[in-house]
Image (spheres, rainbow, N blue to C red):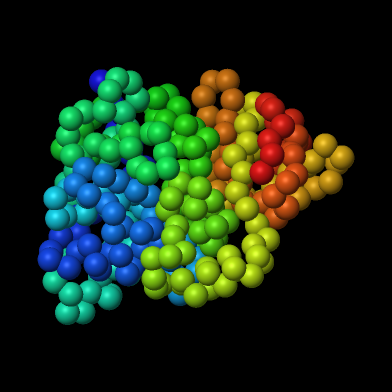
Length: 271
């Protein structure tokens, strides 16, 4: 088995008798069926409904590990800590590192899991130096192609969970009950008023990409749709760009314009 350290992520531990119930009331995913050694994606939202951080939740016995973007973990823990009140819960940063399994079978360890709705395997280990820039880019590209996007300080608090496609990776439940922002999120969902949606596109390697930057994405008939770059990652051959775009769900894109440069997609992409 081969692993790669995910330097863009960091880990916190939530423990205590009320840990599960507490997280169930704070996060967007339904955690009630999460058992020892299982993981799922989720998110923490502002009262406005916008996502503060995308989170990987891994359960180990009665404890829960939260994996999130390194530059958002501080804000996430501050928000979660505000609502503990009398709950028997403790939240602390962990000394474990997040890794991705890039080859071989999943280890027989409860701290390794493939989150529900995905095929990638994540793990938690003691601090490791297994760094490789090229492999990390390949891993992050695979994440984006799978619909997994980690917000950072440039993209936090800008998108509803539906805009990021979190329902596609089982990170958003409309049946679990209340959580911060739930009323806004549910209203948009049930009234069918979602105007922006996510799409992962592939282009040849270019330097005119900026996280949080505005782009135009074009359909085959030349019509432009405005969007925002949430994240991108590339190999020596091509780059996957995760975009939230203002467009209907049945259109096919074949070009993108960023930084004044118009580029064809490697293959047409339908949202």
